Image 1 (cartoon, rainbow, N blue to C red):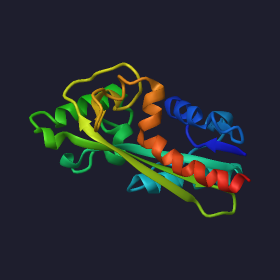
Image 2 (cartoon, rainbow, N blue to C red):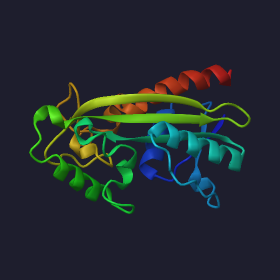
Image 3 (tube, helix red, strand yellow):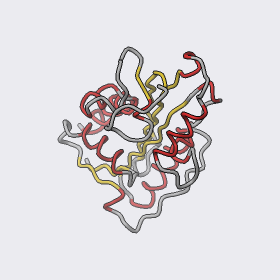
Image 4 (cartoon, rainbow, N blue to C red):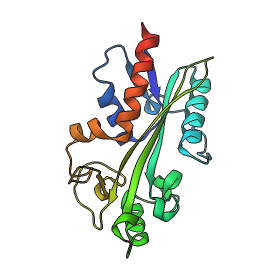
Length: 198
């Protein structure tokens, strides 16, 4: 079964490829295999809308099974920010470091309970001429007051999952990939893929 990951984000592709490694019936491609494909603008109001938009658009354009991910960090005390704007929180072309800096600034002076946050992931699977299926999960934790760790990407160096004492960026990739929001959503997805592959 050939699946195209509707992303050009190398971190995201690597994470999903790593998760799919144990499933030999899946052959993974990404948007790097289709350099002429132009993805749609992400105009959804939430993660689900964006994931469905990316998956269905690429599916109809490429006529392939497509998996799209939309995920980000939600801080309830900031009204749900960064939310769907996680990647461009500090501006359209913001770097991960700029986004983290803006988040830390927004949380200055906040109490411990106001620093609670969660990562949310929506995976949308689009199969030609079939209904798009969605699988979602969250990973709850807290935002620390300074960056820690050199692994991961995005907000990983600021987020500690509940019951852990290290940020996602301090954990090794294998551990992070076992406990992350993306992993939990992926486990739901894989049950569905196995059911249609046999």
